[in-house]
Length: 365
Image (cartoon, rainbow, N blue to C red; front, side, top):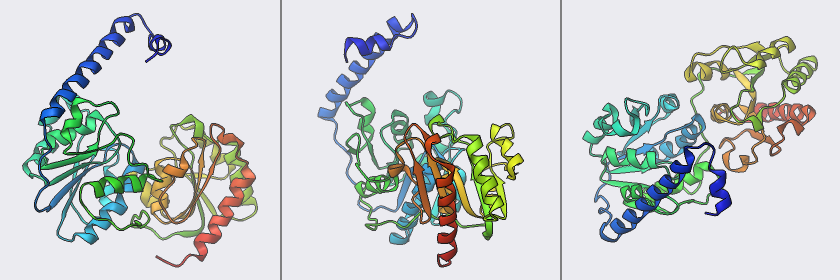
């Protein structure tokens, strides 16, 4: 680490002491790790695998992308008990997964957070199951490694840290940092499952969530909210798109989905959109499933609606949708890195009309 980068880390007086101390802690941890690595050996792979736990924390899109793997494992191993550990935010997605033996929800902010995770009721319940395989789904994370440790499975698989750290020893089969170098998120998770000794088909089926309502021809959903500012499409452009589609009679109804009623995108009601309040993820899925097509910012709503089989047009300014795009049948991504506003409303309208035609012509699933 160069001197300039160290200076950049000094944001306040306390950092003059804090940053060197953190560097010392990291150095000490790596030294202990390399010492223990010389004497520690991975546990033997279970002779018979009858149970597996997939840890899938974080976002809705991450949860949706795990569904094809669960379905494939259930089909390939009918007797395998497949468990998933999720958080309160993304757990609702797994209610739509077929073949789960158990869904285990853990609030990571419980009591003293990481210091008390070992005693969390969800961890204790999982530890009693004496699971054969625990697979940490995702890249390297010390939190993910700690969860794997406290669950106490017979064999742990996950991604190790970049430079070596004490928590890498949790994994009996650690994958190199930055691996797998897949072409999409779903295939990367599939690589982890295969590394755990489980077979999957070479090509996984698209994500799929059982659709609770029939699609209404001409119904369009708009999901503009997004955390990443790079993907916030201008309100006036959304207004132009809605007004043009209504004027052309290309849509019969436009439903507006927002995270809360205080969103500035509520102004789109003046352009003809009808705000559709939803309480939670299941109520969102129930309401949005009646729409034939969806115009959405990149994120969870894009993955959910893609899995519902809707025609989805995604707007993104992140420049990484070749990897993160929804793993679904009817998806069109419009993306300009760091400048989502450069996407012309006319191009969005054209994409929506093409998607309507594609979905209408597709055979019923």
